[in-house]
Length: 138
Ligand code: CMP
Image (cartoon, rainbow, N blue to C red):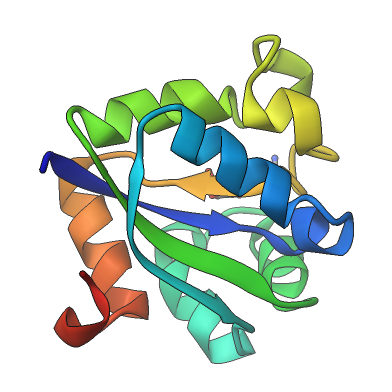
């Protein structure tokens, strides 16, 4: 076991057919999937999940993007999960992401950046609980 992070494969990456490739990269990097679902966020869900950003100018755009189509939500386990997963996905803006990172390979733009990764252990717990009950985490 190790500690945990929370991820979403966002609507752009799902639309572009990258679910399988992204899950392969996650597994190859040593993360164990302990929870996973294919789901579609409602406007209320997205507004609640991203409440921390609700004063930002891009909030409306973010909510409409994240509700545009289905996503894959998952909880991942590995030693140093939060930091190692953020390294695997790369910078928020794919234009700044390192070669070989998930966002460099599969993201479309700053707003449509293919994947989410929790930014702290505390937020990983909050975000995992937003999407999964205890009985859905194995
Ligand atoms: P993430 O860090 O997963 O969660 C917040 C998201 O807001 C971020 O990914 C981006 O997709 C999005 N975002 C951040 N900055 C901007 C911006 N300037 N314009 C549009 N979207 C943004």
